[in-house]
Image (cartoon, rainbow, N blue to C red; front, top):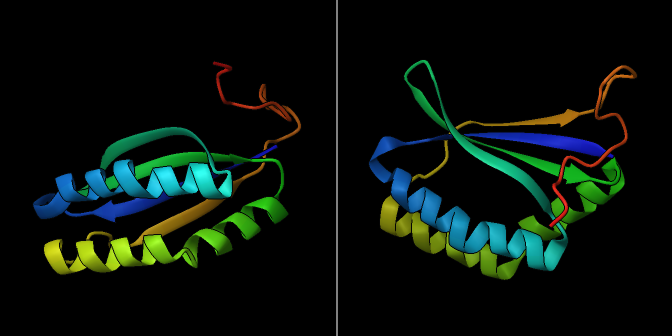
Length: 117
């Protein structure tokens, strides 16, 4: 089991539109079509920068890579990005992507961080 941390720089002037797009479209497409397991999502500040951070969980790196490739090629997602960009301008600045591999002494090593529902 591995986790992936994604951090997006978002902008105050269209922050609400970004959150609506992620909540209503990106997360839906990720989960229902490509098996993304979203563990948690946060909004954070880093200096003067507003950020949206989220944690994903994957069985392994190959599954992660295949799912991201499929999501990025999704026609509906491409159209949503085009429309929201034309309506609200640039919604995401810098993106940080980190693969989190547990250490051998991590309390969660090999375990899912998802809460069973």
